[in-house]
Image (cartoon, rainbow, N blue to C red; front, side, top):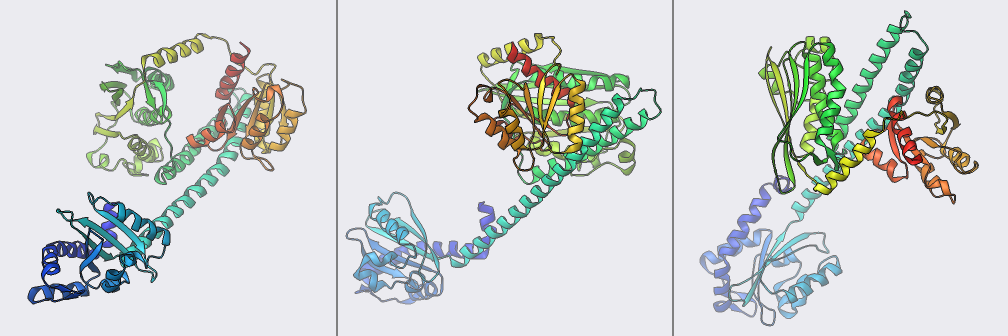
Length: 563
C-alpha cells in the first residue's frame, strides 16, 4: 500500500518531505526569531531568513509555533492564511479559530479536544477537509523542553485527489473482475447443468446395452469427451475465481496417511495397466492429523499424478510425503510426486506455471490437457503460503514437490478422529437406496429423467417436485417420516433450494429438523458448499452427479441414523 501511495503522489510527495526537512532545520531560526524579532505578530526578517520565508510563502506548507503554557501563538512561517484559511492575527486573538474552517464540525471539535488533552509524547496528526474544498494535513510535535508545540500544515488537496482517482480506478478494476467472475460462474452453471444431462443419459444408455454391442464403444468415447469438456470448464472457472480472489480455503483436520491412501486407490489401476510401478511412501510423519484444505491439496497432487500417468510409459511413479520439521503445533511438509516419464526442457520449466502453457503442439495433441492445471496448482499452494519446486530432465523424468506448513492438532483430537474412521471403516454393509422413499426437487426435465431412473434402478421410490415451493408443500402434506431424504436442486424457479431447505427446517413438526436434505448444484466451490450447509442441508453434491458416490454418501448417513 505504501509503495502504491508513493507512485500516486510522485514528485509532490518528495517535495513535501524536502519542505518538512527545511522546516525542521528552520525551527532554531523560528525560536530565535520568536524571542528576538517578533513584535505584536509582526516579523522582522533579514538575509537568508527572508529568503527562506519567501520560499515558504510560495510552497503549500506553513508552520506555526504555539507556546504550551496558555496555548499562545508566538510565530509562523509560510502562507498560513492560504493553507489554513486563517491568518495569524485571528489565531493570536482566539486560538480556537485554528481549526475553525474545517468542513466537518464533529472532526474539528474532536481535533481540538484531542489537542488540548495531548501529552506531547508522540506526534499528533490530523487530516481534514476545509470549507473551500481543500484538504490539509497537520503534524504537531512538542519541543524537548515541553515549552512549544510546532505545527506543520500541508495542503494535500492535489495528493488527495490523486489518491481518490487511484481508489476509483481500483474499485473499477475490482468491479470488472467481479463482473467477469459472475459471468463465468453463471456460464459455468448453464453449461454444467446440460452436461449433467448428457453424462447422465450416456450412463443410462450404457446400462441398457451389452458391452459387446457395436454402439457401446461410441458411447464410451462420448463419455470420455464429455468428462474432458467438464474438466476444461472446471479449470477455466477455477482459474478465474483464483485470479479474482474469490477462492476460500477450508481449515479442517485431516489425516495425511488417509490422503495418501486415497491417492493410491485413485491411480493404482491406471498405472498397473501400463505396467508402471506405483507406491506412496511416508517419511518421518509423526504428526498424522493436520489442519488445512485437504480437497485443494489433493487436487494439486492429483494434477501432478495425472501428468505422471500421461507422460510415464515405463519405470515408476512414487509419491513421497515427508515431515520436514514439527514444532509449536506446526508441521512443515514436503509432498513430492516423482516419475520416470518423458521429462521437460529447462526452458519449459521456467514458464510451466503460466496459464495454457504446454511444451509443444505435438505434446498437446498426443497427451491432451488444458494447460491450466499447473497454473491452478501454483495459485492454490501460494494461497496456503507454500511453494512448488519442479525438477526435470528431458527423457529421464520429473519431480514435483510441494512445500507447505500446516497446523497440527492435539493428541485427543487425533484419537477421536481415528476412532470415528475406524467405526466407519468397520462397517462392511452395502449402502443402497433399496426401499427408500426419496423426494427429488428438480426443475430440469432431463435431469429429472436421469436421476429418477438411476434412483429407481437402485431400488428407491421417487416423488418429484418441480420447484422449492412444491417441495415444501409435499413434505408438509405427508405424514411424519414419510420421506427418507430430500435431494434438492439449488437453483429452481419460484423458490430456490436453499430457501426451501430453510422453510422445511422451520416447520412445526418433529421430522422437519431431522430429515436429511442434500443439495444438487452446478456450483461446486467451497463457498457454495458452505452456503448449502448454512441453509440447513446435510451435504452438497455438484453436477454432473457421480451417482455411485451420491448413493454411498446419502445411504451411509441414512444407515447411521437407523443404527
